[in-house]
Image (cartoon, rainbow, N blue to C red; front, side, top):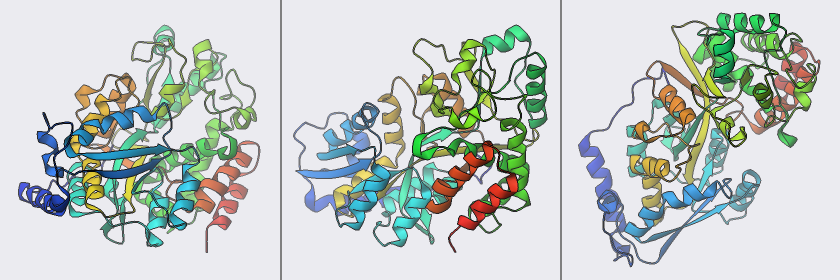
Length: 448
């Protein structure tokens, strides 16, 4: 997932020192675990506890919560710490209510770096202990480290990751019609024109998502910003050191418009251009299965939306290719992920937080998700253990040293922009509003 500078692996001495500090912190609460400690060598560094509990709050709900809960079983057995996992659909709202009300969880899993920074600024988040910092620096690139670093201090650890720079397609259709996977943006445009010339709308697109309608537009635009202006301009745009309505953003949204607002390119099997706004994002790629469109840009998580029985593989009914760059000299990758942040500094909380930042947990999580659908940018994750073809493809992209990873921009922006004006104005843009009016309105929403 990166062009970012090489990961700085800490010395063995630092790792041992960090583990020693954690063991010392845990010594006064240490005790024998009731279940036994056979096969617990990898967990000895976290210490042993008696009758200690740690609460973990998340937006991950049943049945997706089961792999998470299972990934902590060995940790619980070997350390004696009981993890109380709670998932809630209204997490984004309720976690802030709980924190402001003085009832925060010990740990919480966030998908938005912007919210993490907001909570740090309130003084509620707890700075990560040295053991967590050591793992974060050991197993993640500098770009990922930056998403949990505020004012030079680390406040959490990355967990899962996803790749958003994907285009879904039918390998069987490509083989039958002689299409080839494009390697550059020019080739992507040429392929789209070739499909359209054959009498079929090449793209199927949907941005509907209830109160969050419009977010797929932000992903399209962010991918284009990365490709046309580069990671430095992308970072400046996300941080508002260049205006939201500047020439870089204008060029990116206009480039998206060449696809999403082009009646020759959309909306295969779904309607005209305006149907892009009314089509639910979950349904938007399905016309590929009926041969009504050929291409659908959506992240790796979209793999869960294909109906049961659909063969998702390089030679199957459906697969995905990397959304190509401007040329073959760069490989920008847009993605998202999760981060765990603490609101307590008890020894047992530090121990569990350190475990979540380790390669041990990343591999336990892979093992507890046999059906696939989860990966991490943790370099200690053994990609050879992945079984899902899309997971394998995502990991290959994430671990490619040529890749330049950047986190979803709207998730880093202030809420008034990233999860409000950007979504709403993007929807207005799809249904006819001009690029200038759209970007001017979003710029005006930026907090002064």
